[in-house]
Length: 156
Image 1 (cartoon, rainbow, N blue to C red):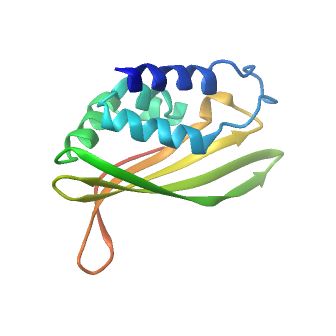
Image 2: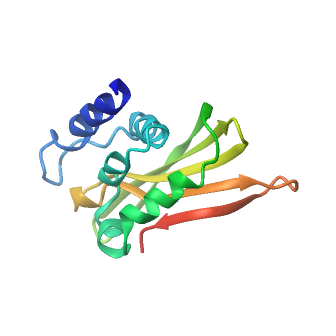
């Protein structure tokens, strides 16, 4: 119960207190990644959905169902998690600046191992609503060292 309350508090702090203009501060995507992982463990669809960018919210039919499917595909009880954060990259065109980063996580359960990746848009100078998760993937490792993607929710 405490984890769920903490997830909501972090969501509010990260998303709702910055001013809603183009000069608002960047999203703390590393802290947000940990909140999303806790939300998966607690089966908290609302928190995960709150971190999605506007593009995903507008263009994914049955977003809540897709998030639920991602959670449901994780078999067993989560026993541990680890995350590697990759350097951000920037795109600038026509006066627009976009900064994105990737968090690659491993989720270990009583039944197996899963790869869980999030691509974050943590800053742009034109639309606060487009900040957040741009892509989220759940996958399973193969014997070849590659991963088989089970669920991908992606901005268009």
